[in-house]
Length: 208
Image (cartoon, rainbow, N blue to C red; front, top):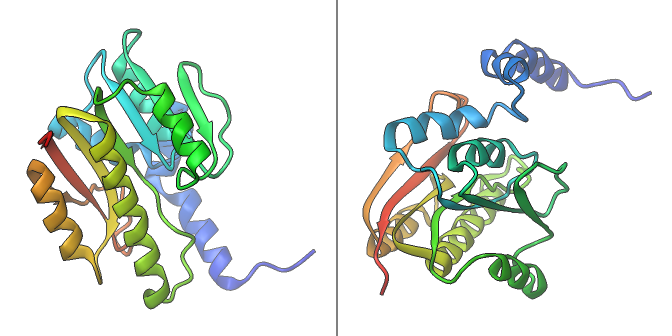
């Protein structure tokens, strides 16, 4: 058996000591990421009963799990990821890369035209640790999420998209402000302090 590196050992120690990890396990959530969405939703009331929600980069499913509880029996949650996701009751899952026409088409088939209330994206690339490689990949995913939001959101709908500050970041924020009335950046408490991730919160979509 291969011996774990010291950095892997440190990560595992930190991970299992993390209060958000412990809370997620005790409360039955699929990952600690749920508390990022919960904090933002509590402040902004993004997800309302009866809403239609699209969750991109959904696996392992904590955000879909949370959204499903919030929308209630009259709402819908459609999720997609290139990674597999264990079935969640009440969540319609589209597997695959939504950059591919077939996957993208399947997502659109499940969503009524211009009637989605909330687009969520916690997508991130596999990080190499090399900024000149990671940043363009992260920005590309954020741009894709914003583009898809523009195709499916209803007027005054909203989007919550993971972003990383760096090259292309200001241009993305500018483009978002052209499409939404309210735009701001948030970093929830459950985001690890050393992580460069932030969330682009875009409210009140302008249908043009």
